[in-house]
Image (cartoon, rainbow, N blue to C red; front, side, top):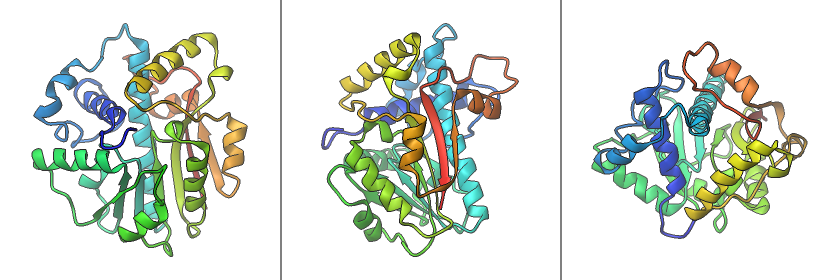
Length: 280
C-alpha cells in the first residue's frame, strides 16, 4: 500500500461485509456496525456492491469474506473461554469487533498502516461510533516498523497470552515481513492463538480458477496493493512448525461449517483461499 493512502482493499472488504447484512439470509456473520461505519460517505458504493446471482465469483468472494470474519471470531471465543484477555487484529482495516465487543475483560489492539487507521478513525467520528476504552490503536507499517515496539507502546502485555487475527494481509506481504510477524506471534506465552487466511499459488490452481485469480490480482494491483505471497498446504504447515493444533480449512470444509442448507447461492467456490488457526 502506498504511503498516506488508505487501503482500497479494506474498503472493498467492508462493503461486502455490509452488503451481507442487508441482502443475505440467513446471515452467517452478524455485524450491526458494518453498515453504520460506512455511513453516507460510501452509501452509493454500498448500493452498487455486486450482488447479482449471475456473477458467481462475486458471490463466492462475499462468502469468503464473511466466513473469514466468522471463523476468526469463533476462534476468539474459544481463546477467551480459555482465559485469553488480549485480542490483536493485524491489518484491522474497517473491522468492527472492537465496537461491539461482548467480552468486558478483553483488551483489543487494532494494528494497521497509519493512513488506513487514520481513515477509519475519521469514519468512526463522522458516523458517531464511540471508541471504547478497551481498544488501543497501534499504527504499524509492516514492511518498515517493528510490530513488537508499536504494540508495546499501545500497552500490549507480552507476558500474557493473546489471540491474533491476521485477515486479508498475508498475500500482500514479502516473505521477510510474513516471517518476522509470525515469529513475533510464536514467541507469545502458551495459550496464545492465531487465525489467518492465505491463498495457494496460481500454478497449482485449475485453469478456471487461474482466470479468477488473474482477475482479482489485476484489480488489487490497480489499487496499489499487489499480491506477493502464496503457500501450498505443506509450505504453510512448515511455516507454523512452532504451533500446535493446526486447523487448515478449504472451501469444502468451510461450506459445510457455515453455508450448509442454504437456498441461495452464497458459498465459497474453488480451491485457492484457505482459513487457518493454530495455538501455542
